[in-house]
Image (cartoon, rainbow, N blue to C red; front, side):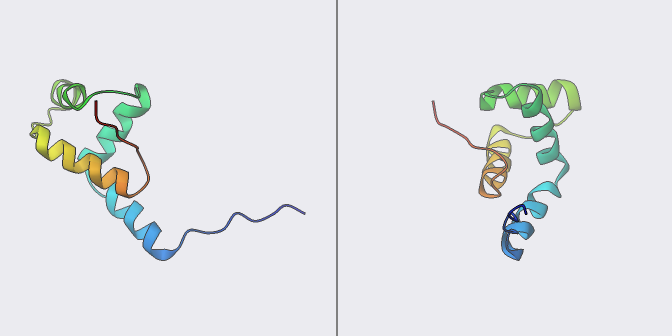
Length: 78
């Protein structure tokens, strides 16, 4: 018999769904799936060029923080 994977708690699921509720954050995830390891500048450029998203670097950084808090991405400072 296989072991069951523990289900995430309601707060964790709520955090993930809240992060995925925003279209810009979903676009960021889509772009990171295509090419991981992008810099903030690269993410901002791709969002502007491919998707017409004209958010500031600060706004994109805040979106990344929400995604990281939900456990969907990890970020590093260079």
